[in-house]
Length: 281
Length: 252
Ligand SMILES: Nc1ncnc2c1ncn2[C@@H]1O[C@H](COP(=O)(O)OP(=O)(O)OP(=O)(O)O)[C@@H](O)[C@H]1O
Ligand SMILES: [Mg+2]
Image: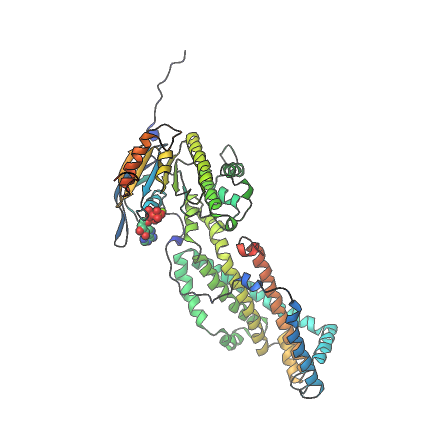
């Protein structure tokens, strides 16, 4: 028996949360797409009226029009773009590091039982830690520079990717591994042609989850201490009661989140063309 | 003057491609294969019959070297190809890449690509070479799986109900194809089927698996091409049906 222990059933505690299939999410009744814009627009109009009439004081929440002009100002002065660049860089570095670590560890744990015994218990223990609770320790260890922020993002990112990739590898159909054996694929070929592509759909689910947490971790890290970036811009604005700047910051956070999510969806669509759902669209 | 050297049949040429002694397979309390003996000679075309659940696929898995938990003696050639009961195509590889999977690139007269093209043409799937397996019909998937096994030109070809999803016409074509490939490359074939007529039309030897053993083993010497209503085949058919526990129509 030269092949991985894929054939043997493995019991794992990992249950990645129920995920709607990507296709189900993409399939939305077409037709009157503009109708979906009515209620948000009404909301903005009501908000504007409330602000203009003084019902909603600027101190609590700036008017949409103020937010818009502030946004233009912030872009023109360069403040916003610098802040975005700093935050984006933190996320990217943290995401790359955490993603590599998560997928790498999942490969070690997923491809052999020895690896699983070595890696999985530790990952399960760490997973139980509330990692936002680690911020004080991180500050003690790494100060308040870039390191603790990037590390927090990396840590947050690595778990969803680890858990999903590990489950994906173990979920690869043992019957396909048998095919690989009967056509005499080597172990490396088995991993390349069967195991990794088979785990990919679940890894992509992990990727989406981890991008979500990446932004969350960044926001938390930037709230606690920062001297640059979107979080810093927001905190600074709070001191001067600039609710308009805060709202711009929040909008940018969510736009960036949506953007990265769209990127993953694009990736999913390209990588998983073999699935019937994608073809029938 | 050249002297005629008597042709030496080497020992390896006389050796069976598979030899099974006292093979036992248990699943918990259930004994599915019970001290089974079987020898498959070089180039022999064997059909294996047996009720559903009698252990035919279990025997095939053992012969394919996929079952690490069998007890008893098992010697099988290295050169085995399998078409499983379910097509088992790799969903993320297009049909053509499924056929070439694991084919050695070097040493063969033709490259893997050309061989796969030929195999696909033989099973009538050339047009679907670029398709994703999930878009194939049941019969198409089965033919692709068959092509993947045939293209390997093995010494032992294990076919687990490879024609079950084919319509009657395609089935006849594929029967001819398998017979033709068999007469060219002469692999030993072990064909699992539920169809007694199919077994009689194709095989040299028909086995019935029952209670974990080869309960019935008869040679079919009728020359090919065969016809269903050949008297020899008809009498053998009755014997096989009764071995399978079915009373043949018309009698008793
Ligand atoms: N992995 C397994 N665990 C438990 N029981 C099994 C397992 N594989 C097969 N069996 C049992 O062994 C028996 C023989 O199964 P097998 O698949 O060999 O039957 P078969 O003769 O191929 O039947 P069919 O004609 O329906 O394909 C069945 O009763 C089946 O339930
Ligand atoms: Mg079977």
